[in-house]
Length: 445
Image (cartoon, rainbow, N blue to C red; front, side, top):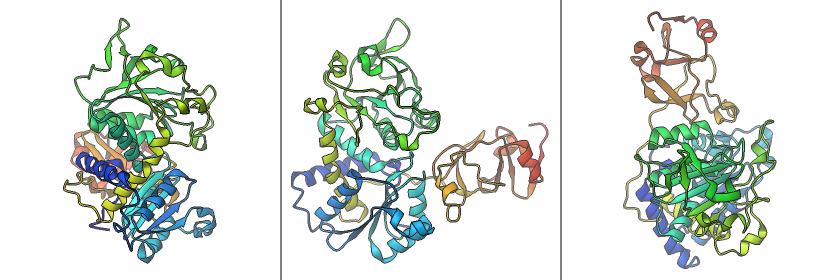
């Protein structure tokens, strides 16, 4: 709906807005019981298609502490979804008169963006598949801001499952915008997805390269560590040239651990040999001042004995989810003063003019909610023509492109392709698909 603010992606907020959210959260944290008039008379609806403890309860606690009310659908298997009701219809009903803000968790990537298209009230993304989890990212950033006093230039190690963790994906985008340095230490086979790395490279000038993480000891002993910095030239406060031509990790501000997201694993994925962080691993000089974070729940990746170490802040991190979510709710419901402007709006979207859905991500909401989520795209490059799914942001696999009403197809890097208006583009994954649609391949391309 026009005029509404949603929180679907961390990119929906400007850096100035994020900083102002932190200031509001810090005020709330000083006395959580002193804000009961902020949202009195308003209702939040929790719609959770996947299990949740911290995210759902912290949002509900936040709304209640603001003086509002909460209605909950915490198990959608016993809701009308089990009868075949679409996400779009659920959102239409609940946002009509039931609630003033929707908090949505859904297994399909891009589900929150679809919900925002149909909702009459603000939508907050509480996790959509392995895509994004912006409110957890705000909680994580807020924790770093409190603990370290800044976000700019921090040196962060990201360890564990970087492929399927939506928390990691939102987190790296935000850290890059704030100018933090990232060291990726993934479990083998669970590296940061190519589409995330590509976005970091294209939007933030980050060029991933191998890192010498020997100073991290057993933390990185079975991983090919990768160094990513969002600025050019590289910030060398974290890295110095090693004789091998790699960049040596010699200082870390925070280690961010993640559990294996086995509920999203494919047949080839495995958690065998997954990292187990304990006091011995954290004894290295490079890690001496590093706090340890985790979005929780944990399994065996952090030893319970490490809980007593003053560097373990994951339970503080979880507690801070309440004041930061109080600030998020207050902002989206218009009950807090914000003097800074929002980030730029997303580029225009266009319906796909093709034989089928060209989004390669079968977990995308455009594949799982086909009745209300027709395939659509955004243009990210005109030469060559490149497009991403408007819901999950995966790049479309394009072999040929054409124009509506003109049955000639061209390579995406052809000059003729650049002259086609975005709304008229037709995408083809191969020659056979173009031919079946009655298109011939242009010459001289």
